[in-house]
Length: 486
Length: 101
Image 1 (cartoon, one colour):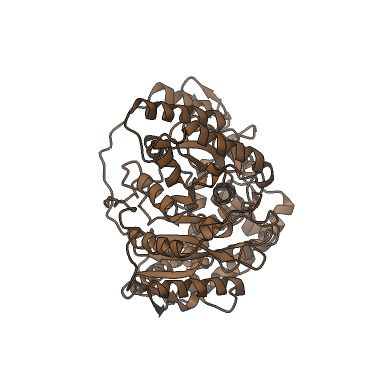
Image 2 (cartoon, chains in turn brown, green; image 1 turned 90 degrees about the vertical axis):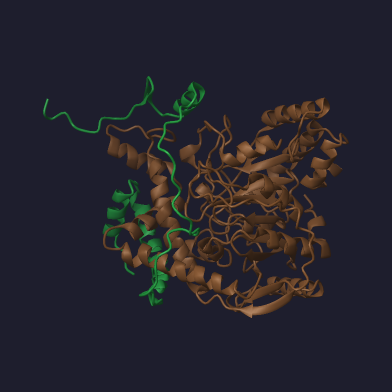
């Protein structure tokens, strides 16, 4: 196997900068790998080969001429297909946007272009990021590179699979209720949802605006820090982005974690937890103890209501956000004689069943007579969930939990029962409701060889402590040095 | 929570979504079971709790309401995605009948 595709983004950036490798050589290696493995894995909706090679040539020219270069100059990255790259198709894995070409760049894409990154492809997702397995994609289901009978997680399953299968060293995902962390956990990689407001969402397809964040996915913790360095920051085009200075996350990543206080929420260590997951998390706790961290049992008493609150809020917001797909300005239009029919048929035929189910649930929860009982009530319980975290962080620096109650399940196992699918997000959604940052890092394998992830949660805007703890664990283990056999 | 097919028809009309009969039947069941699960939030006492509309408790973000001109290239790129257009306008089917003509 070509050694280039096993290298981290940090290493690749270094070697390209030092002229040990050219960006074209690196980009071609990943694209060659994608062409070989993707017919089996199906991580990509489109491999943007020509676009990438042109960018790579530009990077090589810049380096040869001695011009100023970016932190990711010449390094490939895969982008979830709900983020806009100017002049590149963007589908959100929906039939309604099947023929849509982005007229402008998302802010994160603008920043990545400045940093010199090379876009190798757009990755598959559950339609409009609604799902936990990519089975809701209108086009196809992505496979888990560790075992192709299993889901890669979702909704950023394409991005997670792409990194895991070594077809890109980095990827961007979006996370509304776990859509970065759960697939990262399923595919044995690192995935981070930044604090709400840390990264601009301008140019990302809106799903649930009070919860959505864009974040990094990578093979190593340093790579995630490097990528967050680039994409984080206030953006006047996203009025929910927050003007808090962005530290250099790499500066503090290697700090000692001696005396770090980590909370274990008792509500997350329940009977239904898969025994392999439990074992891996217990081992991780032992490793942390050896590194000098202290553990405290904590309580997040409203955890049991999080899934219910989340589905009311995300569906309500989605029903409003997706009203824009009406077949007028862009997207699929079913030709009819009058405008109302055209709306109903365009949306009825253009959206897939999970998207329609969520629009229906959200419309119901917001409709006259039900607003107070559902949406209003959910917003109040959300306050209590947020307070649970505020109280916990009075006594601990970080919270540690499993990323998911089970390792990646089999394709088809839960697709017929929406509620069972919703419950698989049980450990990741509170984080979005509370706005805190969260991260999944690989912490082992099940007996069947499926990756297991551990989740770290930190205070608002304290990604630094999370990176430090994640890096410390990574250095004590070798999960990030294992690659699937495909 | 019981959901009737009539409820589904009403909500579908609000949401501007067309469903066939078979889909309506399965939706009626699925929405009922999801709403049943969601009902549990009613157990929580929220009488003295303020709602949270989004995670970040920031102040409102103000900016001047000024027009920033897009380049002709961006305008053209936007219209390229339009299902139907005339000059720089999106074209739609008639909204009203012509009864009063």
